[in-house]
Amino acid sequence: MTTLENVKRCTVCAAQLPNPPKPILQFNPKAKILIAGQAPGQIAHDAGVPFQDASGERLRSWMGITKNIFYDATQVAILPMAFCYPGRGKSGDLAPSPECAKHWHAALLSELTACELILVVGKYAMRYHLGIVNPAVTSVVADWNYVGNCYFPLPHPSPRNNIWLRRNPWFEERCVPLLQNRVRSILEY
Image (cartoon, rainbow, N blue to C red; front, side):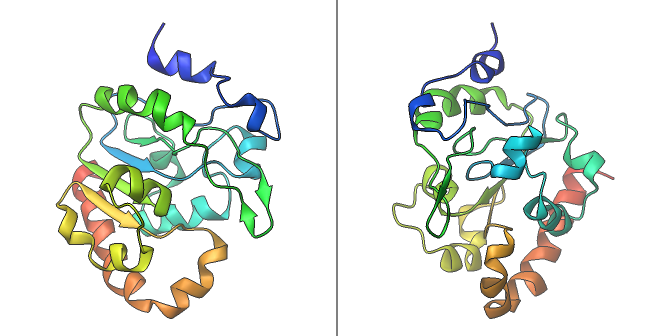
């Protein structure tokens, strides 16, 4: 059985979830870009498809790609920090459970042999992929180049971040065009 097949059958954190486990990810070892996100939301959980919501529309816009390219697993892998919807809290979705990262991420990441770019979306992914203990998203995104050419930190594309985007217009003015150029050069479309 492959790692992906085992992930799809995972029930490690079933007792913590508001719904039965339904791991949502997109994976193919040939993927050239990895989107390392937080956790699927309720809409993605219901659809069984990652970023099947307004966050996905914004993320695809930032990347400058179509839905067809985005959902082509040989082009784009999507590995959130937690594969199942964690539930809702007082101010939005709950934090992703650390269980997925502990059990599955190292094995899956080692299989991504063609990956050239990792989009690190949000503070939980920044903690894991960039090794920043308490990331200040604005600072990490503003200093994106310090992590080298294979990582590109992003704020979460959720509509809940509209205020952040209004307060930080430099992101869409400077970072988004750089991201789109990098994605275009990797995917050659």
